[in-house]
Amino acid sequence: MGALTGNGSDIDHKAKTFASDLCVDTEDVFGDGSLNLNECEAAVLYDVNNKEVIYSKNALEKLYPASVTKIMTALVAIKYGQMDQVLVASNAVNIKETGAQLAGIVSGDSMTLYQALRLLLMYSANDVAQLIAENIGGSVDGFVKMMNDEAISLGATGTHFVNAHGLSDPDHYTTAYDLYLIFNECIKYEEFTQIISLQSYDATYTNKNGKEVVLSVKNTNGYINGSYNPPSNVTVIGGKTGTTTAAGHCLILLSKDVNGSPFISIVLKSEDTQTLYNNMNSLLEGVNS
Image (cartoon, one colour):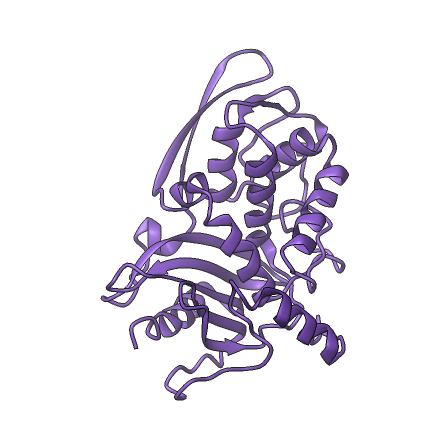
């Protein structure tokens, strides 16, 4: 992935269109220079209420999002599905890619959208992303079109999805700024913010033979599962992780400052997990500065 291409008028038009109710980020912003994020490809910190760009590095560079993709999968599912809707798996859930995070569902298994969204956002199950896509979109391709249409409607013009799970594809990319636009829309839904804040979840679904199966999962977000601690004056509400060889280690977060005001922070393409959380903590240091 290279730098975002496009002419200045496109960016100006985008800025004018969304300036009224969103952060507008068209160039790097390093503040007073106290935040140093050299060990990632892109990073941003936005004050949601004040629509202020606190920090921005390569916000418009097109990058692979890995499973951070699933915030858009969840957004489309929440907008166009029903929580009690029963989703039935087909062979589309048979993902063979080595290392792909899977819930282990097979064709004929079924669960509600309520259950599926938790497995999607907390456990980052790629097979569950396929389950959601096919049932909500009528087909996986139909759902991906809905994802791209939603991106366009949100002004995420540097984004193109080819799947609902985020496994690497040359034509599947986004930008840190576009992820902000998508995530900012996601957090308007109480169901979404509730899910990303959960530490663990027990999903009881029905397998193809009609028997109940219990799947217990923990949140992959290190701040939520207790593996990492944010700065003492920051409260992490939740977010979404993403990791592939091509994308590196990625994380998007919703946090609050000492007054309870919301902030969105994003780190893309860190080299490993420890570096990812070091980078994110460096960003979060800017929340109360």
